[in-house]
Amino acid sequence: MDVALPFGVRDSGGTLLLQAGARIVNQDQLAYLRSKSLFADEHESTEWRRKLGASMGAMLRQNAPQAYWDGAVRMLLRDEPETIA
Image 1: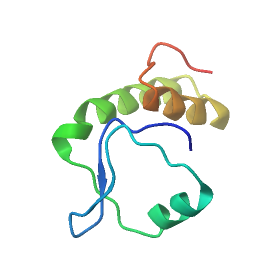
Image 2 (image 1 turned 180 degrees about the vertical axis):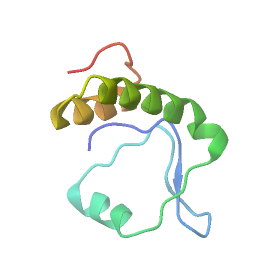
Image 3 (image 1 turned 120 degrees about the vertical axis):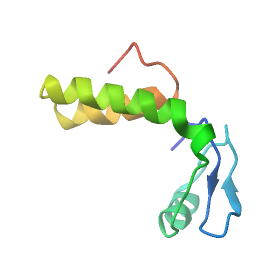
C-alpha cells in the first residue's frame, strides 16, 4: 500500500479499477482488488515488468532473503531500480 503503480489495473471485463499513478489507500480497497482477477495493459506495464524481472533475477543469483524481494517490489513501484533496501 501507499505505492503507486505506473500502469492501470483492470478487471476481466476491462473496467478500470485503479488508474496509473493511483495508490491503494486502505485495507478494504486492497481486499477488493485481491478478490478480482486483475489485468494490466501490456504496453503500460512492459517496462515495469522488465525491471521487476531483472531485479528478481539478480536476487535469485545472490540467494537474497525474502526481505530483499519485498524491498525490490517496493523499489520498482517507486521506479528506483538502483537501490534495494
